Amino acid sequence: MRILFVEDSERLQLTVAAALRRSGYVVDVAGDGEEGLWLAESNEYDAIVLDIMLPKMDGLSVLHQLRRKGREVHVLLLTAKDTVDDRVRGLELGADDYLIKPFAQRELLARVEALCRRAYHRKEAKLVIADLEIDTATKTVVRAGQTVRLRPREYQLLLYLARRTGEVATRAEIEAHIYDGEADLMSNVIESAVSALRKKISVPNPAPLIHTRPGLGYILQADPE
Image (cartoon, rainbow, N blue to C red; front, side, top):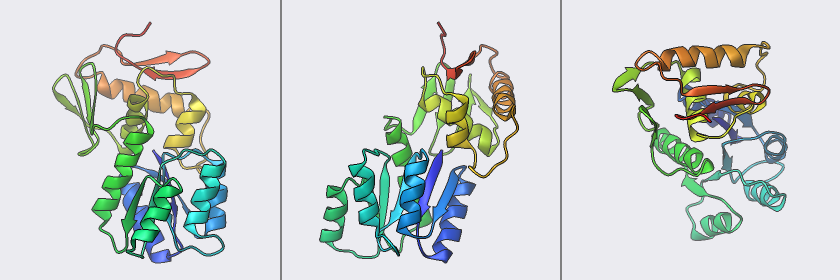
């Protein structure tokens, strides 16, 4: 999942971005509102964490511009002002959630995960496809009753496909949501990643769940057409 974090505090940039990356997210960071707006309009994000007090353009103005242009990405506002007016104004402009500084990293991570679930029209923390279970709260994967150990990138790839169960995910979409925009990807990196993931989830049960649609992409489902 790909997250945009817009915050002018270098300390928070480092600590929050590091926490998100440890949780498996791809993270882009912006230090002011203008850069944040440009990144938000240039990329597809699963969620945006947006500070209200920013140089060049404040967070509420960034949010207003995004909604005015029809961008529906879920936004978590950060504010140091514990006032009803700030919260109400943000929600009226289309924010999905808010968090008051100072905050616990665990709470921020939980709220970001909840927004990512909502981005794919899911509220539950556990995804179940046939005998495959993905618990997004504990980040564990079980198939046919057996735990499947995945690397962080493999887990994010499986989660992305699972959240789009029954839909074809193109190579470009997988790159945009799973890989850092600055990464120099080899031409076969997606194919190799999918192949490795297939092998790992097929150990408890060889019945295929990830299917290739030639010229289109990949789809995760129990009963392909």
